Image 1 (cartoon, rainbow, N blue to C red):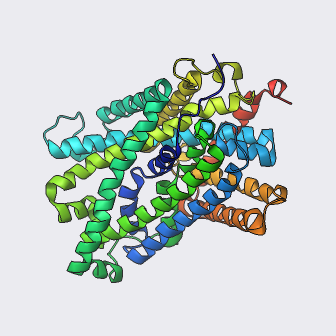
Image 2: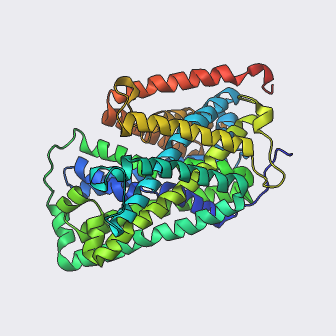
Length: 464
């Protein structure tokens, strides 16, 4: 047994990891949600996508500066340790390991299962489900639950047993998922300009039952889910060749690709269907209008593949979470979680811990958000609300960098981190405004988790 990873990933894989983790299902169904929240106002929706992208880009630029200087295990934990010390690094690592990674991962496993069943039932409407598809069987039925757990186990198996295969899977699924997005962007824009539909959608809002308060902020908050996950790419810095050069390049180039794809896809969708159709039926109607029923149904297959690729990238972060704490001699049983299997060169015990956390959060998600068995303070959206505390964790890192990076120029020392801190504060504000009282219930659960983390830190065993 050893406790070090080999350098197995190159720059292209790292870029695909950034793009593949972020571009999942969100771009497909958040387009409909953003239109609903803006009252069918297409220009306002585009602004929301751009603002969400700029928030991501500003944080990525700030972390890219740190990635050029600090490299140990799990990038964001490295940056927190270098700027604010071991205790803060442990807290953010604990949060990401037990809360942030698993909630996103289980959500993508569920979405992978959901869209797989949607594709199957669209091809074969008579496909037997215990709860018919028309009654929500594709997202609530036992088949969806079993398939979700199966996807979780498969993602765990690939990442735990063959990390190189996981890297190749990330590259291939990223390329596959970009195909329908590019097709819709180009085809929709050309079709919309020729038919006049694009101009109509830009000037004619749809009718919705109720426009939310502060539609722009609510829409930016919705776009945040579609932009989330990029920070997980920093978790492979110990496995990336020439990490101090390649990780910043991967983060920045991947971010630019994502923003361009999202905005162009959103405009392309507007060229393929009216705002009202998109609100009522989702993006599938635009694909069907442009490419016919066959390709419209195949879209669901592409969405499923897209979700599986994102799930693979997220599980990559889950698999390394406990390890990133253990190599610092922190957290529960570091001697167990910091060992790496000689055959797979992977932290197998850490991977198992990540899988268990995903399963636990999936049970919570099912009881509180799907079946509605739980109610009251136990109910909050685990796919969006963790960004509230994630961005709160970022701000002290950016501020501390400004104080400590005395050798950097004004742009790198002050302007970029201050913009990143402001963008993070904006996301916190937008999230609180969009989710209201649910933020308080979330923070209660968050505090309980963090207190548990403090209890399990075991400072007597920590390195001095």
